[in-house]
Image (tube, rainbow, N blue to C red):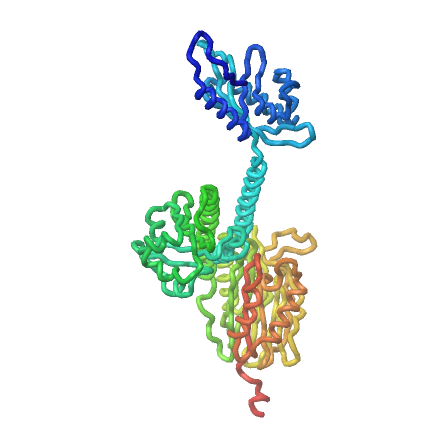
Length: 574
């Protein structure tokens, strides 16, 4: 494409100024790396001006005006896309004004450069494309921009993955709060602080915070819905709010005194919406950030949706867990009966790995002739039926014990009772009949861990020959007769006045990859290192505290401790 300085034909007056302006326009396009082209669709002939030829690294004399020659200059892996794009714009009537495309050109020295075409489609009266007229320009910074965009996309994906990973193991609300305030989330997000606020009875309550000014944490733990704060505004509008330091100073006078002495520069205040319900508001604080790009706003809004789902699941988990624990504890003894001459302490801890209830139980029962019955058991399963069966079995055991049956007969009757319930559930159990005055004791166990006893010489596990689990159906195992007739061997021992007896379920002994033997050794260490028999409650807390830090505790724990408070006659005389 060239511009001539010759006068117009047909006797028209010359226009030197117009010709000069057109020449300057052509030079301006050339100086800015912009070239023009015209493509005749029918003949497939294409004409490029010098600037457009330079973009394709072609000299005017070497271009044959064939579009196939230009295609050969395009990087091979991008040619199919360019052809498809051109075919689309030619048949699409919407592309009659302007259509663009990015592609890479391979130069004669082997290097590549990005280029961009912008064209208009000229059509005849029937809508058939006749010519394509447009411009070409080099895009030296396009690769850098694409690299930046790709880096941003990778960062956003990393933030989403880090948040999802941090929240994936969260069960209850405390787990979610721990994850939110951890570096695993704050680091990728680039934040210096975070807080989570909920609405309780029309009052704002902050559940967790990190990186906030100490005075803010102290003074604004609770608030009102009409407070002059971004959090209150988001609770009312249920829309995200992105504020800067200047916004706080100008619009939130209540909050500004806490912010002005800090390095805070911006905050994203995000509603936690799950199933069209607002469960809380998440505030993320930044230092050094002056504002939020559209991409950052979209990312943080998407993150708030992820947090909202986890938070809602956590709320539901805690609610169901509280109900399950309440039901379980309602089936345990409301209190430990006072036994003359004995000190007794009991504890129950639900599993942390799920919210379902189990069948663990303990009981202390007065027996004829001043004796006392101590029992710990575990019904198979973790559901409502397991808890219901546990309640029935505990009641039956207490009734049989009160009737004065021997430990062997007690276990046999309990096994038959459980089998007759037709639940297909088994149960394990350990039962001790103890005389507080003398310390003489008898113990039987049905598939349950043996008791431990702490003496002046240290802690050891009693060696108690056990019988089968309670409720074992006929024929399992085949070598045993009817379970109702199977004897449960009695082991007799004596509990001294300064000795402590421990009964527990296997949840205290087995966890993660720890086997039963290692768990029993740990219990012996805990007993030896704990308070003496004079304070069994402290000793019980000392033992159950050992499981507080376990992650993913998969089973419930029932614990029963007993010691004699009446000294032997010989000791009393001494």
